[in-house]
Length: 116
Image (cartoon, rainbow, N blue to C red):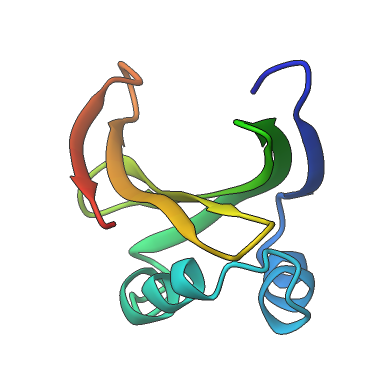
């Protein structure tokens, strides 16, 4: 995040993320929410454990861009799974969405997939 980024939300408890972030449109990113619901949130709790989520705004190329990052610990694969994306706050256009896996010990990205 640059110095010009403004953090809107930082969720560390799943109940708060679910209530404010999802049910009350705090993350305001329906495309990313759909992937969350279809893949990550459908996993058993003992497999995918919510860790944290950030939502921030930043000026890029003369437009306000919303970035959302959601991190889970995948106990089966022994890594962090991060889903993140950016979208224009001006017109709602999705700019980027990715999912990646980060090794718990080395913090290196071991897998990344472009979703948009």
